[in-house]
Amino acid sequence: METVVSGIRPTGNLHLGNYFGAMQNFVKMQSEYNSFFFIADYHSLTTHPTPEDLHGNVKKVLVEYLACGIDPEKATLYIQSDLPETAELYLLLNMNAYMGELERVTTFKEKAKKQPQNVNAGLLTYPSLMAADIIIHKANKVPVGKDQEQHLEMTRTFARRFNRMYKVQFFPEPEAFNFGATLVKIPGLDGSGKMGKSEGEGNAIFLADEPNVIKKKVMRAVSDAGPTVPNSIKPEPIENLFSLLRVMSTADTVEYFEAKYNSCEIRYGDLKKQLVEDIVKFTEPLRERIKELSSDDKYLGKVAAMGAEKAHDSGAKNIKDVREIIGFRKF
Image (cartoon, rainbow, N blue to C red):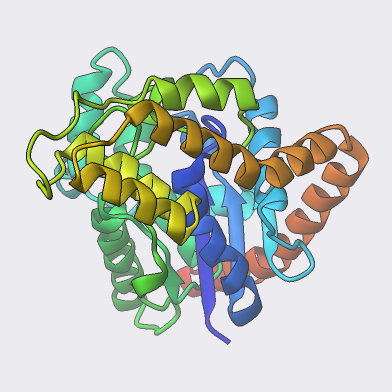
């Protein structure tokens, strides 16, 4: 069975884009692959070196992974810092990671511009930490977005370099996991681009949002005065609203508002009210499950401990082999 590894930084709640873009596929994946899902608390320190509530943020992500259907009995769900072997492999990979290649990484250059007072070594070596997260489990596949493709290519480079330097075929060169046609892209509420945390709170509908918050966000979504020519092409902000409608509402509801748009009779207030109703209905079971899990620290502790043990079983064996290959041996 092939191994898949994926991580998420604990920098905020999951939103509808996360759910449809990845979580649904993770739930399916856990039954078909040897799956490792980790909460990347080390990674969060590259941009937030002194987080206000690191433990609380980790808890949020753990709760929401579980609420979305990740089964800790099927998959290995763990916290990155609970696997010290990752940090050791990160150190060893850094010994053969070169300044020039790290400085050329697009995300490093972008982050360095955004946070010129905090261009730290962790930010520079982010690709080698990501590589350690992946190859510590000898992963074959990694679900990544466009913004992470360069990092995955560097992971392949580090794996290939280790194999070449030590004349072994130890680490696989992981490939990008392609969700194919099942991947649904959820647009944001700001009129352009995708739904995401970095675009601002008002751009995303979070799985834990209460109905009144959802209503406030949706009713403020960017729209216009409406079409003046029948059957006209929708501008991007309006197409975004209809894209959300197609995901959240029934086919006859979508057909109704399409007809109203094409006949220039559309009332965006009505469309948004329908969206609010359908989003609230969809997120209600997730929201209730999040509340239930958030109050059960005993169960969360059990899940975290189970995940740490399962991750350790994989990571400890592989780091032992790495140490032997490099030449670290006891007298």
